[in-house]
Length: 321
Image (cartoon, rainbow, N blue to C red):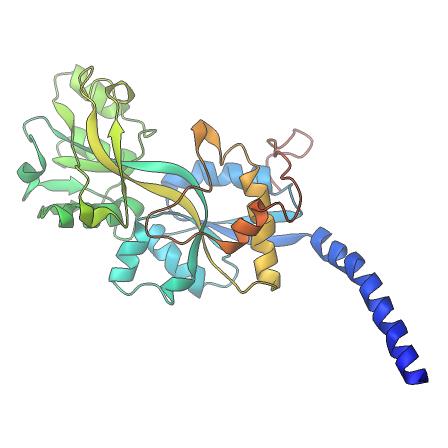
């Protein structure tokens, strides 16, 4: 009887202490490694590191990746990498080439913004079929634009010469005649170099990239308004294209582990960030070809209270964690 009473007292003590222990764990600062896959995502990645490192007891440590494809590999292979900013369609390329282990463990923690595929070419190249045999700047092997180019040009049976230059470098190569076309991701890219060339007598325009069912698991159909690319699209001549997304990718750990709790806390801070909802973006939007993160779902569920709104770092906090 005495042993039963002592056991009962011990049980009551442990139950009473459990909430305090959980609260202590929840308040304990945690560190996460965030790999920024491509240089085009560097500014946004740095803003997230600056703003979110002061929220939910999470400190983000930025890491520079070598392209979206390799960053997906690094999520599994490099110690300390907990999440990565990558283009969503890089997973399809990585899976097709056996570059990721256990692809079923990968999940999208959040969608940060759409990445419209914008194909700019010399004006005498009228459509996709005219690109056969031409030089197209899609970026270095393993970069976000490279993976996108391999997918969409394969679906459209375009055989082309690869120019390993991305973004601004690719557009500059097109303007200078070192490429015949360039594929860039996101209409927030700076197209000034081509607009200046057009005003100087050069001739460049945007080609349509029609959506095909073969792209349903990697891309979404979009319409690029002429107003977004003045000088490259005539007024009123909106053009069809497809879009991937810039996402926060993770390899989902088991529920109840410290790693799962770190991602949940990161997701809480991320979903409250103005960077994640800029321009009307829904960070919880479905991403073609990706499963949603369970850690993010828990962070949004209300189980852990209302998400506080994250503000930019104050001058007192400084620009760095």
